[in-house]
Length: 185
Image (cartoon, rainbow, N blue to C red; front, top):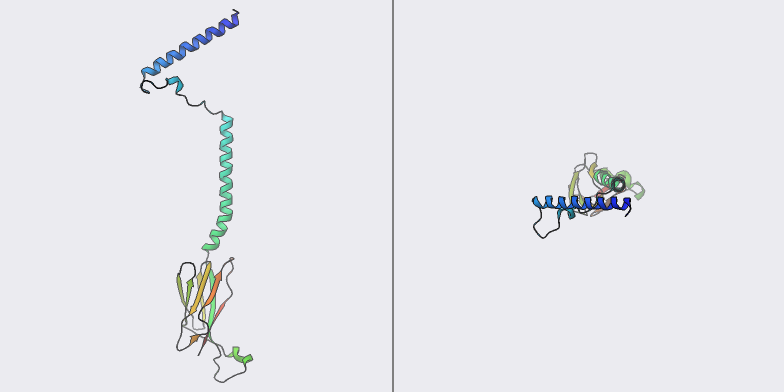
């Protein structure tokens, strides 16, 4: 045989001797019960090369960042829009409160404020009720969150509201136009 082959055969024999010695040494240590694989076969997988691990870490981080940014962009717009309340304003008035009959084109001049009128705003989604009482000048203000509401005016000092209820929808981040609640004698 050539010298090179002899060296390789000797190295192989030396490696086998070391592996057998390792197996004998490991078998003497506490480990798996008899009949199981020898300790040299315990190694599951070779360690992952650094480059593959780095690529996996970078990809996972990029996906996490993308999900966070998109979540903040879309979620925050919806979240902040629904958390910030809307300012609902309006006025309660007695419609056609003139002491003498007037032609219809002058009736709006006879509207008078109703102070102390009780209004109820009921949420269509969860039935939550918010009450407000108009000021002496007939004005009212309250804060409500996004959603649909039914506005009901309660009878007041012998006067009836002109409509049973008024629908109100709060959306798009804009405060609604002022509401006018009319009472009749």
